[in-house]
Length: 113
Length: 209
Image (cartoon, rainbow over all chains, first blue to last red; front, side, top):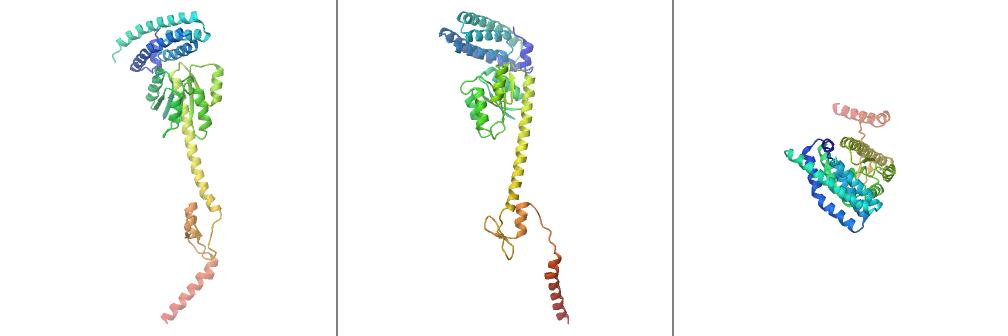
């Protein structure tokens, strides 16, 4: 899920930096998800794989392990040009993102900035 | 040290930026290869660059090749920081001119250590370059003394580059750093000094007499 220890280690134990990074991640997320949806609708798997790759990088930086894995799955499906798997993986990724959003916002609420 | 971060993902870029600043470095953040290239051609170009492979515009690997092809005389340390972690990717990056290679998601302590290696190499190269410059300057001065020097056949003055006739001593002092301590050789003592002393004594003798 959201491995707080790992995420904090990546940010050098700096909780306020981790908060900032999560905010940044959430800020760019809607645009990226809609771009993914558009690529899928246009059967543009190359662009879909590229977008998933980028999201994977952001998720890795904040220690969102399951979002990272979801994005990796979508990237692989996109590269393979597999439509069914891409649709399924995108839905899976959205679920992981929602779960991450809940967990991270709970943590952020508990952290007094 | 000033360090370029060429990374298109804003979250990763901010993480690297904050980390480097915490370690006392100054950062120049670029979200594509073009602006990184521009920063390298700026007034105070950084010597260390942390480079992502996949970026819009000029990719990391192309930027790396451009740096090595067009900035051969400059000491630039390139660290690849990329999610491409296959053996052949690492080989390709090193062949393109990378100095080091780190996979994403990266370990912060490892990045700190590798940046430190880069800083050490750059400082070493800078101090070597400074020493070479000093030696070249010294060599330049020695060469001037080895070249053809116009000298007056009678008074032995030397004509300098600005067309002035100068005393031999001051010319050599300026072009070599050597200094002169004046004395009199035995020949000149016999031929010049002794007759002068005798003439002086005989003149004095006449006056006192």
